[in-house]
Length: 108
Image 1 (cartoon, helix red, strand yellow):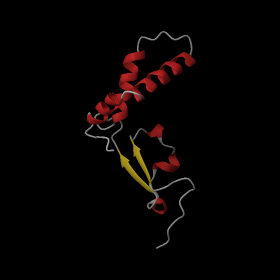
Image 2 (tube, helix red, strand yellow):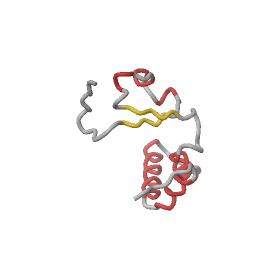
Image 3 (cartoon, one colour):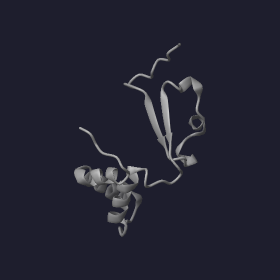
């Protein structure tokens, strides 16, 4: 068996969780390639599956908090989103709730 050298900087195999929305994945990566089978594991979700994807819960929290923002430009929206994500990052109970909502837990 011939083992391919891993790209530098990667400590292990690559796991791709793909939500099957075609615009999220360039065409060359969209089809599985046998030559990369030892490097890449793909978990394919339905196109929209918030009940399987914990990040949907995070984005729901962000959108709820900035939904009434009257921004004058894109940088104000960007700043508001970054600030809310930073607040969520420091509230592990919120993150744990989003994980638990899809049946996952953080170990460690």
